[in-house]
Amino acid sequence: MKRRVAILISGRGSNMTALIEAAKEHDVPAEIVVVISNKADASGLPNARDRGVPAVILESKPFGNDRAGFEAELQAVLDDNRVDLICLAGFMRLFTAEFVQRWQGRMLNIHPSLLPSFPGLDPHGQALRAGVKISGATVHFVIPETDAGPIVMQGAVAVRDDDTPATLAARVLQIEHRIYPDALRLVAGGGTRLDGGVCRTTAHGRSGDTLISPELA
Ligand code: GRF
Image 1 (cartoon, rainbow, N blue to C red):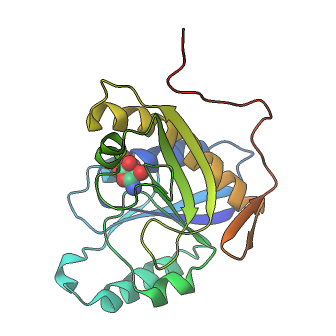
Image 2: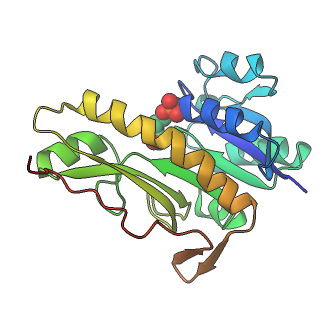
Protein backbone atom coordinates (compact mmCIF):
# COMPACT_ATOMS: atom_id res chain seq x y z
CA MET A 1 0.00 0.00 0.00
CA LYS A 2 1.28 3.47 -0.86
CA ARG A 3 2.39 5.71 2.00
CA ARG A 4 0.45 8.98 2.13
CA VAL A 5 2.85 11.93 1.95
CA ALA A 6 2.46 15.64 2.76
CA ILE A 7 5.00 18.11 1.38
CA LEU A 8 5.53 21.32 3.36
CA ILE A 9 6.85 24.35 1.49
CA SER A 10 7.40 28.07 2.01
CA GLY A 11 8.59 29.18 -1.43
CA ARG A 12 9.52 28.06 -4.91
CA GLY A 13 8.94 24.36 -4.30
CA SER A 14 11.24 22.91 -6.96
CA ASN A 15 11.92 19.90 -4.71
CA MET A 16 8.16 19.59 -4.20
CA THR A 17 7.69 19.41 -7.96
CA ALA A 18 10.42 16.77 -8.28
CA LEU A 19 8.74 14.70 -5.54
CA ILE A 20 5.29 15.00 -7.15
CA GLU A 21 6.59 14.05 -10.59
CA ALA A 22 8.54 11.06 -9.26
CA ALA A 23 5.61 9.79 -7.20
CA LYS A 24 3.52 9.51 -10.38
CA GLU A 25 5.60 6.50 -11.39
CA HIS A 26 3.70 3.29 -10.76
CA ASP A 27 6.38 1.53 -8.77
CA VAL A 28 6.81 4.32 -6.20
CA PRO A 29 5.36 3.30 -2.83
CA ALA A 30 4.38 6.88 -2.01
CA GLU A 31 1.51 9.13 -2.99
CA ILE A 32 1.64 12.92 -2.49
CA VAL A 33 -1.77 13.63 -0.99
CA VAL A 34 -1.36 17.28 0.01
CA VAL A 35 1.01 20.24 -0.21
CA ILE A 36 0.90 22.67 2.69
CA SER A 37 2.46 26.13 2.56
CA ASN A 38 2.90 28.44 5.52
CA LYS A 39 3.07 31.37 3.09
CA ALA A 40 0.13 32.44 0.91
CA ASP A 41 2.46 33.75 -1.81
CA ALA A 42 4.66 30.65 -2.10
CA SER A 43 5.39 30.40 -5.81
CA GLY A 44 5.31 26.60 -5.68
CA LEU A 45 1.58 26.46 -4.91
CA PRO A 46 0.31 26.69 -8.52
CA ASN A 47 2.80 23.97 -9.54
CA ALA A 48 1.20 21.58 -7.05
CA ARG A 49 -2.33 22.41 -8.16
CA ASP A 50 -1.37 22.15 -11.86
CA ARG A 51 -0.24 18.60 -11.09
CA GLY A 52 -3.49 17.71 -9.41
CA VAL A 53 -2.24 17.83 -5.82
CA PRO A 54 -4.41 19.74 -3.33
CA ALA A 55 -2.50 22.73 -1.93
CA VAL A 56 -3.45 24.15 1.44
CA ILE A 57 -2.33 27.54 2.73
CA LEU A 58 -1.82 27.66 6.47
CA GLU A 59 -0.24 31.03 7.26
CA SER A 60 2.16 30.79 10.20
CA LYS A 61 2.70 34.54 10.60
CA PRO A 62 -0.54 35.23 12.52
CA PHE A 63 0.63 32.71 15.13
CA GLY A 64 3.77 34.74 15.89
CA ASN A 65 5.72 32.84 18.53
CA ASP A 66 2.83 30.49 19.23
CA ARG A 67 4.46 27.51 17.55
CA ALA A 68 2.23 24.99 19.28
CA GLY A 69 -0.88 26.86 18.06
CA PHE A 70 0.32 26.71 14.45
CA GLU A 71 1.26 23.06 14.82
CA ALA A 72 -2.19 22.15 16.16
CA GLU A 73 -3.72 23.50 12.93
CA LEU A 74 -1.06 21.79 10.86
CA GLN A 75 -1.66 18.49 12.63
CA ALA A 76 -5.38 18.81 11.88
CA VAL A 77 -4.64 19.14 8.13
CA LEU A 78 -2.29 16.16 8.33
CA ASP A 79 -4.93 14.11 10.17
CA ASP A 80 -7.65 15.10 7.68
CA ASN A 81 -5.43 13.80 4.89
CA ARG A 82 -4.38 10.64 6.82
CA VAL A 83 -0.72 11.50 6.25
CA ASP A 84 1.93 8.84 6.98
CA LEU A 85 5.07 10.76 6.02
CA ILE A 86 6.05 14.45 5.86
CA CYS A 87 8.63 15.85 3.42
CA LEU A 88 9.92 19.31 4.29
CA ALA A 89 10.93 21.05 1.07
CA GLY A 90 12.19 24.55 1.74
CA PHE A 91 9.82 24.91 4.71
CA MET A 92 11.11 27.93 6.63
CA ARG A 93 9.56 27.47 10.05
CA LEU A 94 11.02 25.73 13.07
CA PHE A 95 8.98 23.12 14.94
CA THR A 96 8.61 22.48 18.64
CA ALA A 97 10.37 19.40 19.98
CA GLU A 98 6.93 17.93 20.72
CA PHE A 99 5.85 18.11 17.06
CA VAL A 100 9.16 16.66 15.88
CA GLN A 101 8.89 13.81 18.38
CA ARG A 102 5.35 13.03 17.25
CA TRP A 103 6.67 12.63 13.69
CA GLN A 104 9.95 10.98 14.65
CA GLY A 105 11.09 8.63 11.90
CA ARG A 106 8.27 9.88 9.66
CA MET A 107 9.49 13.37 8.70
CA LEU A 108 12.22 14.05 6.12
CA ASN A 109 14.10 17.22 5.23
CA ILE A 110 16.58 18.14 2.52
CA HIS A 111 19.49 20.47 3.17
CA PRO A 112 21.89 21.69 0.45
CA SER A 113 25.16 20.63 2.04
CA LEU A 114 26.89 17.41 2.98
CA LEU A 115 25.70 17.36 6.59
CA PRO A 116 26.96 17.53 9.28
CA SER A 117 28.98 20.25 7.49
CA PHE A 118 27.35 23.63 6.95
CA PRO A 119 23.93 23.41 8.63
CA GLY A 120 21.76 26.51 8.91
CA LEU A 121 21.72 29.57 6.72
CA ASP A 122 23.86 30.19 3.63
CA PRO A 123 25.28 26.66 3.32
CA HIS A 124 26.82 27.41 -0.09
CA GLY A 125 28.55 30.54 1.23
CA GLN A 126 29.79 28.50 4.18
CA ALA A 127 31.11 25.80 1.82
CA LEU A 128 32.92 28.33 -0.39
CA ARG A 129 34.44 30.15 2.59
CA ALA A 130 35.67 26.83 3.99
CA GLY A 131 37.23 26.04 0.60
CA VAL A 132 35.80 22.51 0.39
CA LYS A 133 36.32 20.83 -2.97
CA ILE A 134 33.18 18.69 -2.81
CA SER A 135 29.73 19.76 -1.64
CA GLY A 136 26.24 18.41 -2.13
CA ALA A 137 22.90 17.75 -0.52
CA THR A 138 21.55 15.58 2.27
CA VAL A 139 18.16 14.00 2.92
CA HIS A 140 17.74 13.25 6.61
CA PHE A 141 15.13 12.40 9.20
CA VAL A 142 14.16 15.44 11.24
CA ILE A 143 15.15 15.70 14.90
CA PRO A 144 14.65 18.71 17.18
CA GLU A 145 18.11 20.10 16.28
CA THR A 146 18.06 22.04 13.00
CA ASP A 147 19.63 20.41 9.91
CA ALA A 148 20.63 17.32 11.86
CA GLY A 149 19.25 13.82 12.20
CA PRO A 150 19.81 10.36 10.72
CA ILE A 151 21.07 10.68 7.15
CA VAL A 152 19.09 8.78 4.51
CA MET A 153 20.89 9.81 1.32
CA GLN A 154 23.53 12.25 0.08
CA GLY A 155 24.63 13.40 -3.34
CA ALA A 156 27.83 15.25 -4.14
CA VAL A 157 29.15 17.72 -6.70
CA ALA A 158 32.63 19.09 -7.32
CA VAL A 159 33.15 22.67 -6.16
CA ARG A 160 34.92 24.89 -8.69
CA ASP A 161 37.29 27.75 -7.90
CA ASP A 162 35.09 30.16 -9.81
CA ASP A 163 31.88 29.08 -8.07
CA THR A 164 29.67 31.67 -6.43
CA PRO A 165 26.97 30.70 -3.93
CA ALA A 166 24.49 30.99 -6.81
CA THR A 167 26.35 28.73 -9.27
CA LEU A 168 27.04 26.14 -6.58
CA ALA A 169 23.41 26.26 -5.44
CA ALA A 170 22.23 25.62 -9.00
CA ARG A 171 24.40 22.51 -9.37
CA VAL A 172 23.48 21.19 -5.93
CA LEU A 173 19.78 21.77 -6.69
CA GLN A 174 20.01 19.35 -9.63
CA ILE A 175 21.32 16.73 -7.20
CA GLU A 176 18.54 17.57 -4.72
CA HIS A 177 15.93 16.83 -7.38
CA ARG A 178 17.46 13.37 -7.86
CA ILE A 179 18.08 12.32 -4.27
CA TYR A 180 14.89 13.55 -2.59
CA PRO A 181 12.56 11.40 -4.72
CA ASP A 182 14.93 8.44 -4.36
CA ALA A 183 15.18 8.89 -0.59
CA LEU A 184 11.39 9.07 -0.31
CA ARG A 185 11.08 5.91 -2.37
CA LEU A 186 13.57 4.17 -0.09
CA VAL A 187 11.86 5.29 3.14
CA ALA A 188 8.30 4.73 1.92
CA GLY A 189 9.24 1.26 0.70
CA GLY A 190 10.54 0.27 4.14
CA GLY A 191 14.16 0.28 3.00
CA THR A 192 15.44 2.21 6.03
CA ARG A 193 15.86 1.36 9.68
CA LEU A 194 16.85 3.73 12.47
CA ASP A 195 19.66 2.40 14.60
CA GLY A 196 20.26 4.94 17.35
CA GLY A 197 21.18 8.16 15.57
CA VAL A 198 22.08 6.36 12.35
CA CYS A 199 19.89 5.40 9.42
CA ARG A 200 20.70 1.98 7.95
CA THR A 201 19.42 1.26 4.45
CA THR A 202 18.92 -1.68 2.16
CA ALA A 203 20.49 0.40 -0.64
CA HIS A 204 24.16 1.25 -0.93
CA GLY A 205 26.53 3.19 -3.16
CA ARG A 206 28.00 1.31 -6.10
CA SER A 207 31.46 0.07 -5.25
CA GLY A 208 33.97 2.06 -7.23
CA ASP A 209 31.84 5.22 -7.12
CA THR A 210 34.30 8.03 -6.50
CA LEU A 211 34.32 11.77 -6.90
CA ILE A 212 37.73 13.40 -6.76
CA SER A 213 37.93 17.17 -6.88
CA PRO A 214 39.97 18.83 -8.23
CA GLU A 215 40.98 16.12 -10.64
CA LEU A 216 44.26 16.48 -12.51
CA ALA A 217 44.07 16.34 -16.29
C1 GRF B 1 16.54 23.76 -1.25
O1 GRF B 1 17.86 24.12 -1.55
C2 GRF B 1 16.49 22.88 -0.04
O2 GRF B 1 17.61 22.05 0.07
C3 GRF B 1 16.48 23.87 1.08
O3 GRF B 1 15.68 24.93 0.63
C4 GRF B 1 15.72 24.97 -0.79
C5 GRF B 1 14.31 24.88 -1.26
O4 GRF B 1 14.22 25.00 -2.66
N1 GRF B 1 15.99 23.27 2.30
P1 GRF B 1 12.86 24.62 -3.39
O5 GRF B 1 11.76 25.46 -2.72
O6 GRF B 1 12.63 23.16 -3.22
O7 GRF B 1 13.04 25.02 -4.82
